[in-house]
Image (tube, rainbow, N blue to C red; front, top):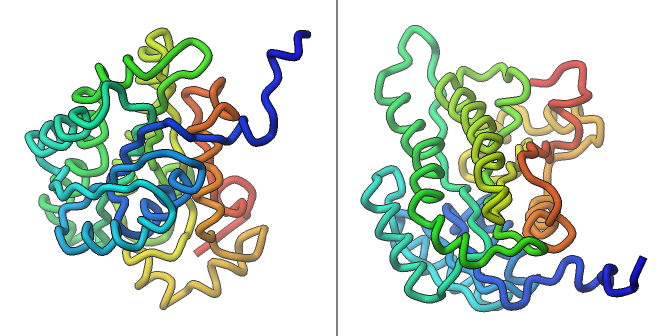
Length: 268
């Protein structure tokens, strides 16, 4: 095998010259991913509907690289298109799209409202589809046979196993997103775009704060690795999927959960 077919360790995970969009990148898992991509050398756009959160996150992340924040309410189709248009103005192609923006709704079955379906499905399932639609020309321009453009959807282990909390629309939306990932992977692979999903377990975030306050120690104790997720765990898997190291993966759903969903016999 020719030496030219081998990449150095640094080259395998290098993202210099790459352009990325991370939705929901102002906090939690989205910020962890944005930080990882920046540290690997990518130029990153983050988005959130909260204008103040965008400004604060851009300031915090700027120490790691070239980052720009664009406020947008991605539960609305027209806002997804507006964000896509603004992203495309900065570059001919988009190398990495991370669909992370999401919502959760916990409420007992007897009182679970229609709004809980519409709100969660619009942001967790429709928004990633709309953004792939709008940004597909830019992804096609960036992708090649050897270095495809990347779509990384953020699913959940709630779509891999059944949690005890009453999150009907959230778990359903993430299961649908996992399948959408596979469907898009099959269609877009020949167009030099890979589509994969990360299924996070429990990571510290505002969304998970009530759960962690109540049973965080119990969840950690039930995980085979006996801890919760950390920033580097999420940054690392995102860089892997976005870099040369992950160029031959598509249609995969990767649990990053310390073994909770895939090996534990039971968990809160």
